[in-house]
Length: 111
Image 1: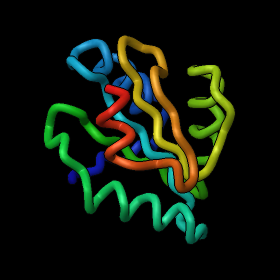
Image 2: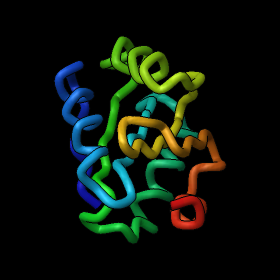
Image 3: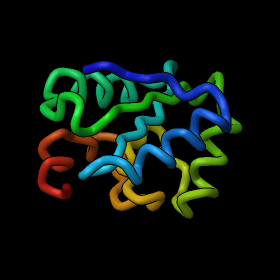
């Protein structure tokens, strides 16, 4: 699994644009590096990821880029959670899960 870091609003704009160019969308994982639940959720995603390049995966470090996390919540009209995974397709959030509800199996089922 290859994460691409989100570090700016222009990165977020690019991700939204990319969400129109894929069959199943793009994934955003909002991660708190100080939270053990977030670390477990990230490891579960990384160990079971089955999407290869068909579902590009983006990573947001919440502690370093909290303003981007707020922007994501606002742009997609979702409540901020940590950890949280979102699937963005055609510029819309079509799926989100948080904490230990984050799983590749659930993502596969909902895509």
